Image (cartoon, rainbow, N blue to C red; front, side):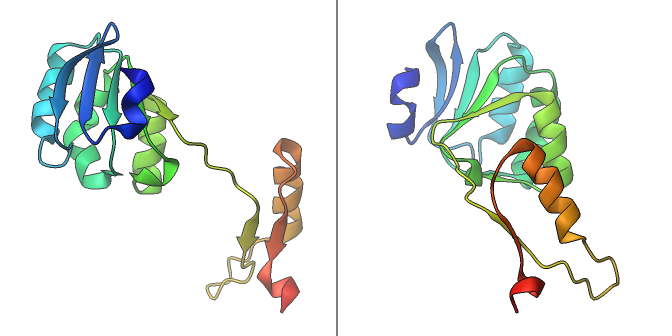
Length: 142
């Protein structure tokens, strides 16, 4: 089943490698999925082929916080959550993406109208400890 996920347009919940339930979409089925996850906390994963939004998260938050399996998505851009919701989700459950999302660089504007400027060099140093992706400050370019 897992090998065919990226070609599927259905939302799956799986247990022991077998599909236990399939929905045409998570959208509109959030409450049913939530109930199923709360009833059976031993599911392996839930596959979400489309976007996962903050409104979906609000409905699924309780169920996913006790979910021991993984969430599988096609691509990271499908996680369309606010930063706070995303942080909570990432603490609650493991998320896997079928397709990689390579970051080629970071572009920032260090100037803030409200006076909360960012020191681009400090950011470069922090990022360079983890990766060698370039950080470009547009105020240095123009």
